[in-house]
Figure 1 (cartoon, rainbow, N blue to C red):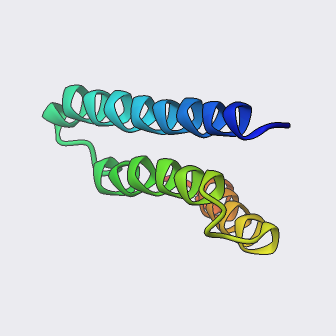
Figure 2 (cartoon, rainbow, N blue to C red):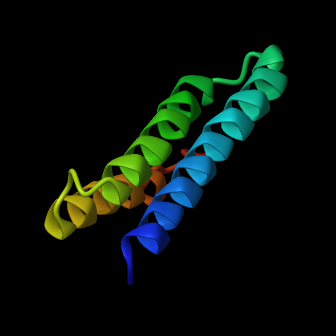
Length: 85
């Protein structure tokens, strides 16, 4: 892969992260008008996922660090339990 292609992949990754951030913020803005209790958690996710994507694309994080961060996010999402009445 030559340098031009690699920069193109980084550009597309940055655009995807930006799109994820903007669409997530718009979604939260529209849904949080009802006073949803999950809005703060969703806001954190909207900030974390694109940030991890950008750091992974820019080679700031190693593969092990990326795996740990994604595993932590997945554990947080799937570890949420709803309690019945």
